[in-house]
Length: 269
Image 1 (tube, rainbow, N blue to C red):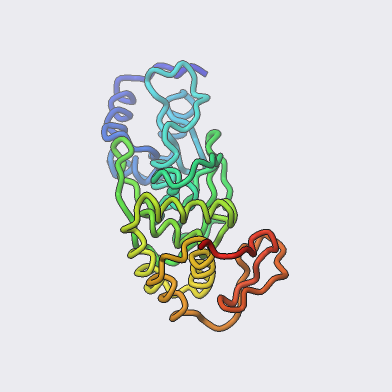
Image 2 (image 1 turned 90 degrees about the vertical axis):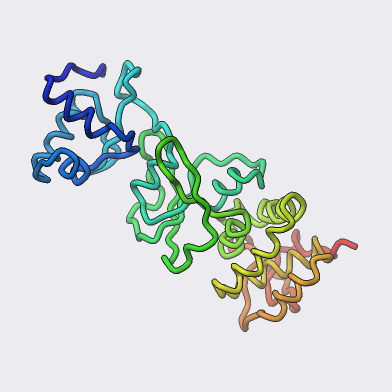
């Protein structure tokens, strides 16, 4: 559908609403900016959507249609900005943050978003953009960096914080093998981040992080003696799987972690 013409008043209102290039607009936004009641604002957004100037991505949320577009059937211009507006408080993490920091060459088709909310749909698809939502406590929002995406400031986990999230839930790294590659990339290309690994692990106190990190370090990076020692000193009771998604029948007793046979190999010399 080609965007339809607007009256002078409607054009002025829409221009005012979109002046700061918001990635998403809601009835609340329109009511505040235009001085309308919430119900009137909702009707106004719906009318602009029908006219092809906005696209509804979910109930009560719209994205602007670029002025140069010949159709309202558009993909999201920047899923990061939309995620910040739709799922706040949140940050981009997991595989998406690893891609951002150059820690992985693996390509993922969805944007990983860590949010303090508890969404019903954890894998929404909004205008062809796929999101993977994971809930984390607001108190765990540490180790974040701000990056600008157009006019929107987006929070993304820094390299070490990204790895800690992956160690807590290996699926966020695409599985244990890719996680191990991310760890190797971080230690090789950003060695100062190893200090942050210990700091974040200490602050978050997630027992499985120490188990998985200690095992991987001792197996692949035995030269990281200080960090290995910190993991060993903070080893908690109980057992964890190296990768919960894989069957594991071998116990690495020193780290209290169950390991798939394919991942149980000798430490590097």
